[in-house]
Length: 97
Image (cartoon, rainbow, N blue to C red):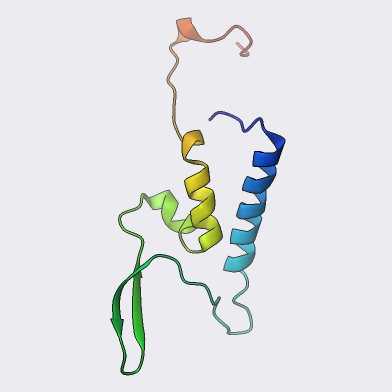
């Protein structure tokens, strides 16, 4: 995974992640967290019912999609969630052997 070299971007990503964890843990004393994330795909009026959908997301993304902060973090870190395979011969010399 490439590292985030820009200190400002790294700080913003950390803040989003901390806000996500705080929002997940804000539902204390029997009170649910008040946030909704996703697109409203079903709604009723009598006895108020709303269903939200984020679409198809991979298993690891589901944890982040629980809050708007996690969704923003997941979107902002897309470029860092890629894999580059390097064969043994193409490994940079600075890597430990």
